[in-house]
Image 1 (cartoon, rainbow, N blue to C red):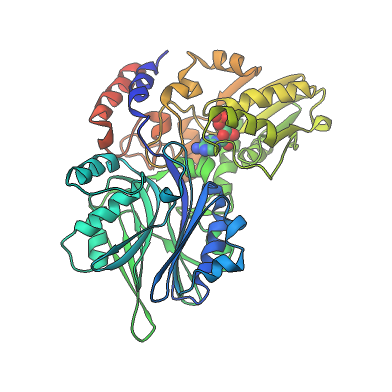
Image 2 (image 1 turned 90 degrees about the vertical axis):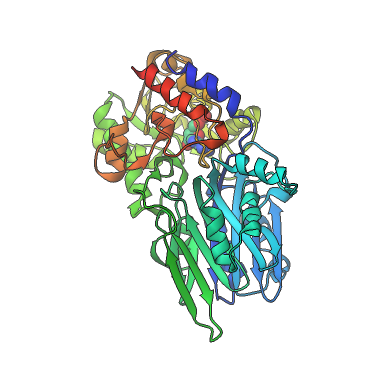
Length: 495
Ligand code: AMP
């Protein structure tokens, strides 16, 4: 079992991290700020369905936070009426470990002597726990278990006079992956981590600036995409006394090449979004095309595991010439499989979510295409379902490489030992466990080519791909130096 050592290490260290995958949105200077934020968050709902919050300012700060879907709450005129003002930020969230509680729901707000500030954060700080311990050691009280609160404490402690400078001072101390929007009484601030792991884009509506996780949140309100917030960049937008908006873009972090998270392309981002200047849909379709070239199979029908596997299955069908059919129908009224925090509910979720379309499966050799295998829960259930519906053969093709390593930058992944790839010595044993006649994964170069057009550059990888390779792009300070051990063990096990 080659990767067990990594699994063992992570078993000890994984329990205390708060993984969050989230969507953020912010707008400045618009009379419908809260409504536009609610719509933007609705478009970003796929990034988190556990809770959503919106903060506005109209002479006073107003905060509304609710558990559940954006549309369940922020379509209510009574709630929107509690959010007056022309500046607003919002957040949609799920967490997989840590507390599910309203006090953790973002944006988080603090009233400081320099004025109030609210922050919404997508990502995960790899030194958040370390800094939190230091803050608590000075006698301060942390009110939430969210890492984002650490940023507020650092802002409060900063010696700079303006909130924007304090914000920059604070985030310079943070490590990991983050895309943040923050607001003060007059400013909307956006910031992306030094290597740009998490996405963040800038748009404009009626001449008013917007920041959001993905372009689909601009499309929903008819806003124009301006550009991506660059890695390591902080953009401060401020309303001037004459009503105009001044935009100040700074690069306080050390210049490093961008390394966007490949998993945004594989699974997380919405297919109609453009992330890092690349269509997520086209990237996913290319993954399927490359997969068909790398791992062809004789079959009668290509069936996607919806919705994640659909664009890759279309690419696979196109490249292989095997017809594409909806052999599995997804119930859209159930959330994403992973969203519920326990394994039992996850497994239950898979049954609730997918059903076999017998007419397209019976008597056929089926190629099932999914975007990724994490724990194997989905594949196990679906192969059984397809066989029960009369398939004569079931071949699985996965549009990303095997996942061996947990993520620490905001993508929900379980402990390394729960990852299917770490439980089996070889792919045949894995296929047997799932019940598939064959199982193949896209290679890392196949994935890189699908997204960026070129093979992975081992000297300077164009993206971050640590869940596949173990090459973590930052140090992981909260892991108490165990990262070094992890990397060494990975290298040793690969050699
Ligand atoms: P699993 O069932 O554990 O093997 O997970 C793989 C399935 O979950 C695939 O169908 C993916 O579309 C989806 N998936 C992959 N990564 C994630 C994630 N981080 N959060 C939620 N769902 C995911």
